[in-house]
Length: 246
Image 1 (cartoon, rainbow, N blue to C red):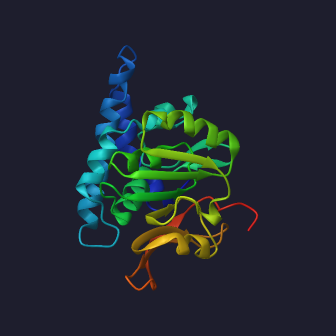
Image 2 (cartoon, rainbow, N blue to C red):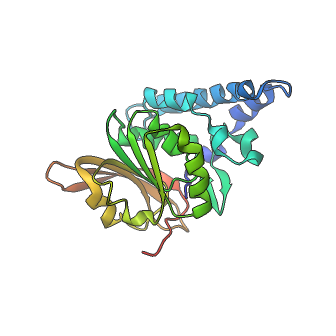
């Protein structure tokens, strides 16, 4: 399960459409995506400069990672020509791969650092987990939809520091807890208590909160050294709902 986009970001496509036209039909596959990938990063850099100094800023090292992770390998074949557009894309089973801007923002907000352990709720296609893995952290990712979980597990075999499992992410991954950070890539009506309990003191969680039928709010949850949590609103978003038996 995965998905997410800013409301304004869904409309930002012109730069990427033009970039896609620059790739020739005779180019090798490795080269065919180079120009649209560069155009996407340029677009994200422009947004990052506009957001500098705000909660919604994007760190440079995160953009560097997005520049080298092949997003086209994490989308279905029929969506590959759209892989570097700054918008969500369908990955089947009613789910989407998140807008690149959202991936970059959520990654920035959890501040991945070498040696940390990060929990992801909603593996989806595996793209967000791949981005996190590039920071030399241990990634534990849960997906409730079995076919997506199986596909993502195969894609993520390239990363020795990523563990995946099928399950209801609402309850977290108790056997692997506690976590330095938690990323939730589906909207919950409220912050799941099991996830908060599995977050380390000093840890951060980023999660969209709100109804699946309306605009949600991307929330940053920070737990202090005494285990007390405080929340901060980042920006309005739209994600697929968190599903399961809870």
